[in-house]
Amino acid sequence: MEVVSIVNFGIVGCGFIAGKHVKALEQIANARLVAACDSDQKRLISFTEKYDISTYENYDEFLKDPEVEAVIICTPSGSHAAMGEKAAHAGKHILMEKPFVLDLNQGKNLVELCKSKEVKLGVVHPNRVKPVVRALSEAVNGGWFGKITHTSAVLRWNRTPEYFNSTAWRGTRELDGGILFNQAIHNIDLLNWLLGPVDEVFAYGATQLHNIEYEDVCVCTLKLKSGALGMIEAAITLYPENLEESIAVFGSQGTAVLGGKSISRIQEWKFSKFSEAEAKIQAEQLNNESDPAGHKEVIEDFIKAITRNQEPLVSGEEAMKVLYLIKAIYQSIKTNQPVKITTDWRVNI
Ligand SMILES: NC(=O)c1ccc[n+]([C@@H]2O[C@H](COP(=O)([O-])OP(=O)(O)OC[C@H]3O[C@@H](n4cnc5c(N)ncnc54)[C@H](O)[C@@H]3O)[C@@H](O)[C@H]2O)c1
Image (tube, rainbow, N blue to C red; front, top):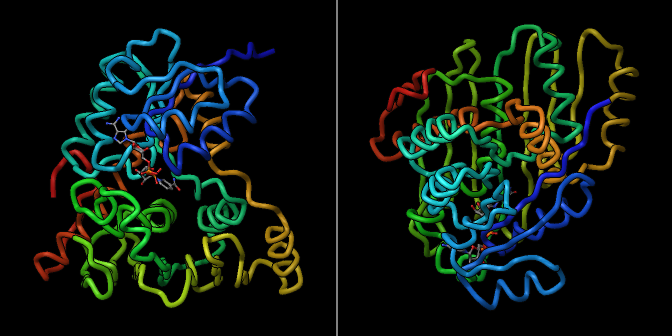
């Protein structure tokens, strides 16, 4: 019988997403929240008042807490690399909110540092654990599509001026990164994980409606190493509200479209290996499964990585792959040229 050891977590950055982590930790028997840190005293107090835990306004002091074994980093994206580096030096395991980091070299350095310090490094990509996505993964890896001809990842969402004005970091290149790092990364990650690697990209971007530092609409064509073609569309300008986040895969023997406002439903599910009735039943069963709280599954997996000394579902190294793709898309937008992607993330584009 496996000995169940408890992992003590600390959270840094007590904002919107930290709330999801706390809820998830509460539901996991072998996880314990022991400390929280936020440089904003008001946020720290309102976030932690219900809990009997240690609180810190200073990150360096928080990292000195010997009770904290693993740190969940929920601060603005542009601070992830520096926060992670300090945590690794303090010997803490790191579960990083997405995007892992915004800079390739910083990402590579953090992956290497965590290896050398022998701490686990996981990145939060909860869409990968959704039942409909797991089913799509089985279909792709099981060869159900026959020859895959093309694929698309579409994000059509609405972000209001109030959203961007809510905190100073949103809408900035330095701390937020851009629409592909902030909103579209989950979908781009799925496309890359399921159907990649991507060989070449060509993209356009424009700032259509928002008064922000980055593009609010991007369209991108892809050549996949497999020979299939692909398309990414990302927009945060949709009137009047979020419309869809979807991924579609088409092949000689299959068609699948997963959609809804955030990839939660099967819209098309047709494969030559199943009768129409069988495929319909599969799709209905999957659509009836309620979405698991993705953060809970991600943390449970991370605990296993620590206690069993194995790699997390999405390691830092794995998270570098989507960063590479996003960086290539931004480079294409900037240079107005197609950009090739090396499969080796250790080589810079
Ligand atoms: N996985 C997901 O689905 C998902 C969803 C939303 C956000 N995120 C990611 O989570 C991160 C945070 O997003 P959010 O929406 O919760 O932001 P937020 O602004 O609501 O919260 C960030 C918190 O970090 C604190 N902070 C900033 N700098 C700090 C520092 N140096 N030390 C301590 N605290 C500091 C701020 O005071 C704030 O309370 C971002 O990287 C974002 O991309 C992930």
